[in-house]
Length: 230
Image (cartoon, rainbow, N blue to C red; front, top):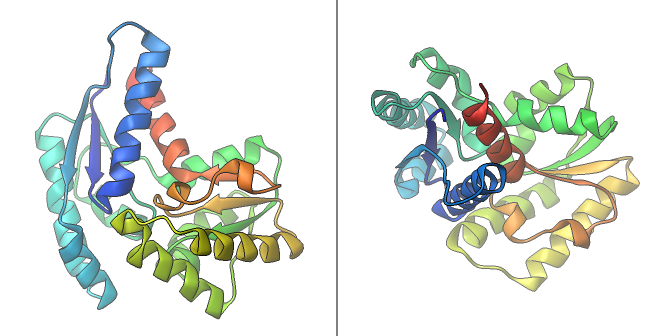
């Protein structure tokens, strides 16, 4: 079993889900008392979020590169960054380590293509929705991306940082997310990407009439497959 390096803590709420999914999947595939061979480096999200909010991405990169090197030095065979937003820095992290980093958008694009879907709605933090680092990966695979309008992007972002990252699940926020998703569906979205690893804490497939792409689950399963490949 290859050793999975988990770069987590952004937030720890979603990192818990990664750890749970990865270990459940290893147990399902191998049976018995098997569990994942993994290392976790969990950073202080308070520091990371402050830098991110102030646009100090070089400082965020410094923290994440140091954490990735710790995982590599600890014997990880590859790394997953347990957050969508920080994949803005994926190339910088990859360029400073000698082991692969599995990109969450690549894994998600593969699942969308398997579902034969051409147009998706994207929910996530402001950087994930507004910057090109995530959407470009999807467009390279021929997938069109719809994002909410400015006001609704602000709502999505606020709920993530002021509620979900703190473990708060509110019905009012869920209804706002569902309203926004309905708008994107009316605009032609055939599926919705839950492009923040905290969103699945709030929204599940049973809530929506189109396929949801849970990036946390997709990314975690890809990590297990990489770990168990011969």
